[in-house]
Image (cartoon, rainbow, N blue to C red):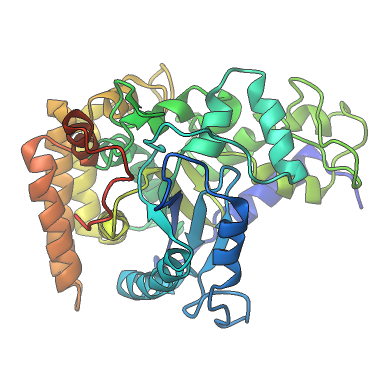
Length: 432
């Protein structure tokens, strides 16, 4: 293959990572921990995991997915992830995902396994890598050099991710505006849906331990891009070039290692064992994990996994705030006091002060609580303007009343259960 040039890499990244068009499609990626009902404090036996996966009713549009098109993958620590297909609008996304999630839960329940929606595994049970793919072995080696955080992330965290179109060239749905709002909403989303206060059976002092773990990992691939770039496409291209190379793929039997400290820009400039190709650039992009990751669409990655059907509230809130122009204006006004204006110097998300407060205090922080309540109100109004969204609107309103209105988040339910001695089995999968 033809070796890359820096200009070629920038042009490619800018073109493929931000697809121009009106907001239309919605998708979600929902992760779950798997616990054995008979012995939840022990790792799930691999044969049970594989039996559940093999019993899934695959078919779907392409013959390899669930009936509504969702794909199921196994994460390095045995977490299971359901990735919905892009749907036309929020209502279709929720309906399709619910249908496939019902099939997923049934297949795992038949093996005596339970899907648990929490941002970190709350039980004190051994964490281990269940996958030996060279990618995950390379990630393990790479992250182990900087402490325990990478291994905890890989084997002990789970999330809800919402995927929305990047936006248009201008107007109320301009890419720059949606990119900025997605990032500025981050602390509010972390705080409102914080659901990981317990790790290895003990409280950590953080309502979102998962977010704290991410903030302590390799900053070249987990921080947000520099905020003072006017064009997010240029900012993201620079980010990709500045990120350290996690691994270089090699033939079977050879380890996927990379020279310490090698950035992709260095690699293009002549460092490394061979010149990089476009395929190397594409793979490198899959190893970057900022709070908002552009993949043609925008992938919001900052929310903890939720109990039951709590993922529905996340999807409804985020979609309403980004896709409804009136709600977007209200959300921008609500979050504006939380952080300095774009371009101000200081730690970037998720290491900035407001992101740390969100992970630690969540809705106990008065400023974050005010912003969250304003965002929920804006989403409520937006869902009221969306035909057929009555049930989703009710679910969002119920969540707002149960949590932000009372200065609470789902993490507080876990802490209450821990204090009462009830957190000896996985938390109940009741919808909020």
